[in-house]
Length: 267
Length: 300
Image 1 (tube, chains in turn red, purple):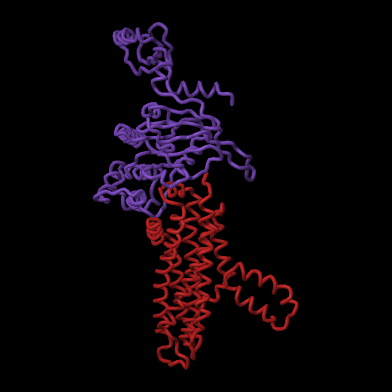
Image 2: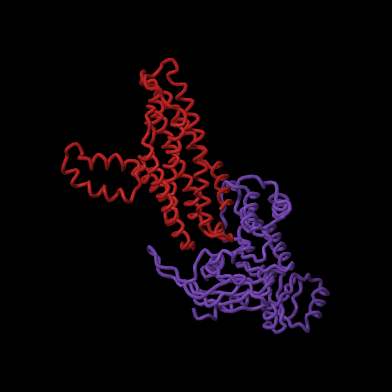
């Protein structure tokens, strides 16, 4: 597994997607810095809010393009046949690729997180906010939450890549999964809690959303940005459960991917 | 003879797909290849050569029958330990370098060498890739990619080499180099299983060859058996202004003459005496002859 991890690590750093998505991330951090000027009273909070959204978007995009490059494209071009001719179980290949992508997104999160941290510090330097941002542990934990979110999306994308016969399917479904997983929580809360009195909406979509909640992880629960933005103490139990959900869901996706890939034929 | 590869009544059918009918690629193939043997696998396109090779390397699962390498079922990763493999039309990860590819092979096969870098560089030099050892593969031509995969297969000190069309994509110089290296490997006692369309190379390297056609292994022969088939008949090609009796003019001044081994020496002397130049003397029955004869006589 280590060798596949290392090859993913090397290939990832040299790939165009790394450069492209990293440039996008830097651009979005720049946008976050500029957005601070839209709120004279809360410049740092706004910069942090916009920056964390940009960071998540960049890292999710990075993870699914890498997974597409390192697994989807290898299967499509049949170069995977050579990788599978080594005396190791196929699971080693998949896990090496997965942890390689996680390590690369971890590096991306660290670099972009540091840039955002600097951007926030440099925003509104002449103004003391009434609610100061918390850029220590709360900020770090928020970055870890984003990385866990990416880890779940990457595991799902890997599963799709392990069974897909269409080269772009992992990329497309990975992106849809990331959006759906993020939107699920707020939408479900809104509908199940009454949808502002729209009973027909609750009746129509409530049961469907209750069912989907068992299939899709609620990735919005890994978004802990309120903590650094307003220095509000988080609900640690909810955070712990969200981490557990992410780890279990990613584990299930990896298990499905290994099972599928182990019996797959490459003609 | 210790069998290295055993294929026992292996069948493989590709399921029907979108606008593609079901295809039986292998119809009960059986063969056994011994330690130190060089086995050439020949057959027309779509005959089933690559399917059998993919079953041996674990990329495909036989629908029926059993295949094993070094006593391990091909589904067991241990079967692939010490097995160098070159796929047909190899493609590698674009962003890695040849050195990294070779290093990965060494480590995944658990090959211990004192100086990994020097060991890998030696093989890259053999395949004329030393100058690009640290360049990403994305800029490589098909021939360079092929040589990288061959270097990778040999660098792991393989006890078995499985090569699917190892000479495709190589220029004549590269092809000769590879044939020489494979010949060295064979002479050093390595076991080699390879497929090729280039019958001359199969004839030169292989101890035995198997001819597969439409999923059926039609024959397994050795060069000695071909020699026995030819009944001491040879074909002489020569250039001359004077044609010897019984010669057929192939092109202006180039003649072919079929002769028996008893008269060979005297005919060669006659050609030289008449001022002619001998171009080639080859057995009347070559692998090519056997190939076409067997294919044409098969029921399919």
